[in-house]
Every structure is written in structure tokens, then in C-alpha cells.
Length: 474
Image 1 (tube, one colour):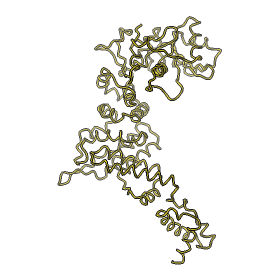
Image 2 (tube, one colour):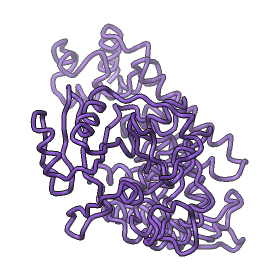
Image 3 (cartoon, helix red, strand yellow):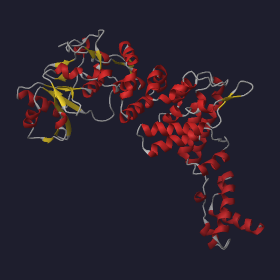
Image 4 (tube, one colour):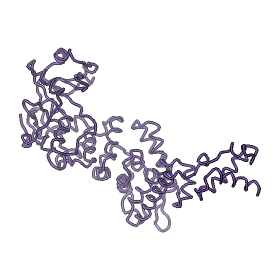
């Protein structure tokens, strides 16, 4: 079994509970290893690398040459969950740590039932990337037929897809005619882009070539998987770069992007075609998924609404509403919840909302739109402006200052809604200033307008005094 050059330089530690299960299988003359994501994360931790290491507790998987019925018998003294035994998995809990145990598998049938194998290499080769196809136990060390350890030892991880021949499963070399993990599992294309988008990994040249070669396979990705993996890509630090570099993948995933590719916006402030501008804007948005999806889908209606005036300047009247319709269709097709869909649609529909920069205007706008939503609209505007030419840098920064001002208003508890006032209609009626709710509300509206300009006047004494003067002048 091949081992990578870096194997001998890496030392990892595994919890005593995991060792206990490995040793128990060994005691019954079975071989057993931890495998997959847990090995990757432990190697990264040992190598002082931040990439690939989860903030949560590592989930441990064990593979073994023991058959399923033997696994259940060997661990019958433990807390064993056999709910997924039909998929070739049992969950054994040792001192509070759940550990998944599986016989060697090389795939699954159409009904989801596992195809077992006697070869650990067959089990490893069914996995997507070389760094997820590493097995380990303390007695034997690493089993690394595809060079996964070396992909984790640099300053940046390397995403390297597994491509092996059907006839020589133990040969980890790349050659023409080898089948790709992208053929076996198209969702791994998006997973590769997710790793790349995180900023912690690069994609190997061979894997880049394979992604391009297999781009049409992404049509087979289920809506649920597309939603999960695309969200991972969009959340990454390098989301914009990934979208631009692999635009042909995303136009297959979301065909509504095709009209944007190469589309000239016919305005001086747009130096890029509509699709590149769209993808660039995603990177300027803070990593809030609803915002990044809004950026991704915000310009879909522009080709439909395009017109050109006598000076050759492009216009897109009504494009926000048209893009909103496209976005709803795409989000629902991908299976997003109605709440998520509405939030994204709200941002797209309000992308051209006029928001004045002065503090009074911001408070008036806060009467219509809650603070967090208004800040997201401004974050949207900032990202879209930043993706234009450098001439719009100053305009984009106005959005940032508006967000800062909203934060100051909230932190200072400045008044912008009726219930923020230090008095209410019952106070006015009780004091005999007015006799009914209608007049009380009218007075409160005038007081609010005054307090929006002068926050210091929002005291019970001053407001009641001002209300009396308003009645006297009426």
C-alpha cells in the first residue's frame, strides 16, 4: 500500500474512546482504521494548519474488515444505534463520544444499500478527494494510497480529486482514461469549489482540468445538495474569485445566468460584462448568505429590461422587479424556505431604494424598515457600487457611513418610532391635554417629528410641555 512522502513527518493523537474501539476490533483479529474528515482535521491540527479544522468536535468514523453482524456482536456491551445498519453503518457511543463504524464499502446500489468489499483501498478510492481518503490507526500509521497527507502539509491545502482505473484500484497515479470522482459523485465538483472558496485550499491543475471536463455532470446534482454546496461556496472568503474562474460551471447550474455572460451594460460605470459584475459584487458583500444570494441574483432581469437611448447609454427600467421574479423562481427551485426566499427577494426588489445620507432621513427610513433590514439594503448597495468602476468608491463609502450612523442611532437609543417616545397617548389623555385617541396620536406624531431632529427633547416633562403648547396654539 502506497504511503505519501509526508506520512513519516506527521504524528496525530486520537481520543481514548476511539482507541478503545480500534483495539477491541483488533482483539477479534479484525483490522480497523479511522478515516475521512476526522483524519484530515487531525493532520491539519498536528501541522498547525487552520484550514480544514472544524470549530466543533471532530466526528470520528471507523472502517473495518469485520462484517456488519460481527460489528454488532463485538460492540453489544456498548450503546449501539443500528438505525442505519441497512446503509452499512452503526453508531457506537463510548463515554459520551459517538463513533460511526462501517465495514469496507466500495459504493452503493440504486436503492441505497451498500456494496461491501474486502479491500480498504476500494473503500478509500470511492471517496472524493485524496485528503479525505486517508486511513489511520496507531499500530500501522497512515494508509494513504492517493497522496492525501502531502496535500495537507503546505501553507495551503490542495484539493486533488481521486481518479483511478477500474482495473487497477490500488494504483493512485493519474493517467488518461481514469474515471473521476466527479463522474461518480457530481456534487463533489461544488465541494471542490467550496474548499477553494474558503481561502484555505487551492485546486490542483489536474482537478481544475477535470472540473471543466465534467461540468455538465452538475446537472445531476439534487436541489438539496445544490442549495447546501452553493451556500458553502458563496459564504467563502474567495467566493467572487471562484464564481469568476468557474463561471461555466455556474451557468450550467443556473441557466438564467447565460444571458448575462458577455452582456454589455452600456454605461461608463460598468467596465465589466453583466455576469462578471454580478460575480464581483458577491465578493464585496459581507458573508451573510441572504445578502450574497441577493447579490448573485440581483441583475438577472437586466437583459429583459434593456433599452438604449439616443446617446448609446443603457437603461434597465423595471429590472429590480424582473430580477425579483427570477430570484424567487430559482430559490424555490433549489428548495429554500419561504422565509429565506422572501428575504433575498426583499433585498433585490429594494436595490434601487433611495436612502438619503443625513441622520433625519435615516430615522424616517427606519420608521418604514427595521434596522437590520435597512443595513442589509445598504450593504447591498455598497457591494454593487464597489463592483463598478473606481469612480464609485466615494459613493460606496457613503453607504458605509450610513450603516455606521444607523448603528449609532440604535446604540444611543435615539427615537424614531412612536413607542420610543417618553410618553404615550394615555399620558396625554390622563393629563387632560387631549380627550381622544385620534388627537393624541396626531400630537404624538408631531412630537416624534420634533424629537427626530432633537433627541434631547425626548423626556416626559419636555414632551408633555410641548404637547400643551401645541394644543394652545391650535
